Amino acid sequence: MADPAAPSTAPSSPNAIDVALADVDARYRDDFAKALDEQALREANARFLGRNGALTAALKEMGKIPATERKAAGQRVNAMKGAVEAAFEARLAGLHRAAREAELQAPPFDLTLPGRAAPRGHLHPVTQVREDILDVFRDLGFVVAEGPQVDLEENNFTKLGFPPDHPAVDMQDTFWVKPPKGAPDARVLLRTHTSNMQVREMSARKPPMAIVSAGTVYRVDDDPTHTPMFHQMEAFYVDEHVTMAHLKGVIAAFVAKLFGERPVRFRPSYFPFVEPGVEVDMRCTFCEGAGCRLCKGTGWMEILGAGMIHPVVFEHCGIDPEKYSGFALGTGLDRPAMQRYGIPDLRLMFEGDVRFLEQF
Ligand code: PHE
Image (cartoon, rainbow, N blue to C red):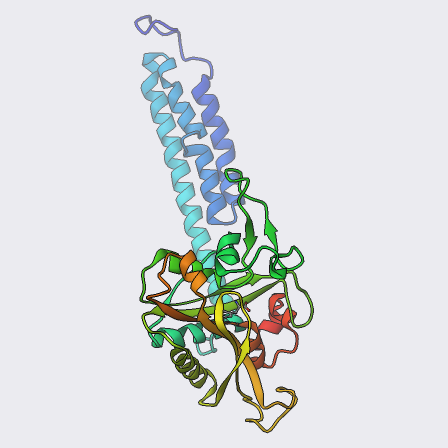
């Protein structure tokens, strides 16, 4: 390092600062002229004045030159800085002017043109039906419950009174899932119906309770009227002195709200978790009972399965069957959606083809 006290040896040969200044001087006008938009211009400017710019680097050299020359060198750097700044501002103003000019030359913007509407989506047909059905039960005082699609065998089958050899439990009908790592013996499945919600809610609450739940269920099944994934809803009511009259009243109200007031009939049927069990029909919505293709000439349409909750189910869920009784009903959501919108093939609903979905 030079000794600052030592007399300087004559006007130095071009030092690092002057080399840098000459370099900047040779480049900045051209660089600015070549910048065709503000972004490019700012980038060019940063190459000279930025934190890592050439002039900034030159200033850092200042300490290395002899003290006697420092003031003059500083003035040369500042003069160059001023020149670059002025050229930058001038070019920036020029670019702005050109942009404004181009805007004015462009075809006029017609404010009176109508806007372009953003395409608007809608709920899936099955979701629409689900919300309508949940609304009906909410109005009747039922509480909406959510449940998992992956559940234990005991919630889906065992506690509902399905014997282990019941055909529904078979691999042919049910998707079985690998048990979780921590519980290698757990019997896990994709729920085959929403009746798992009976077990879950009855085990978790004390009567009285009126619960409705809807969601996705799975069975090994695939043809024009069956898909491996489909949708159901379930409603049940547990209290003292609940009878089939309550069941019939709720079903009549449900049918009236969704399809208009019409006769309803019960046919005996079997589900392991209800006794007695029934299948419920309503007067055909197309022919009003005269007999048509849709009701296969019977004048009736099957709408749901139902019954009085079996005492064994209550016992499995810790509810005293001597004190309490209740009804349960359940039905698919996909068929009503198909009927409402005239959809011929169930599989169409789950392929996600927008050309199909747009029609509803
Ligand atoms: N879970 C039955 C099914 O999937 C329907 C049902 C629900 C029947 C509640 C009776 C009571 O077919």
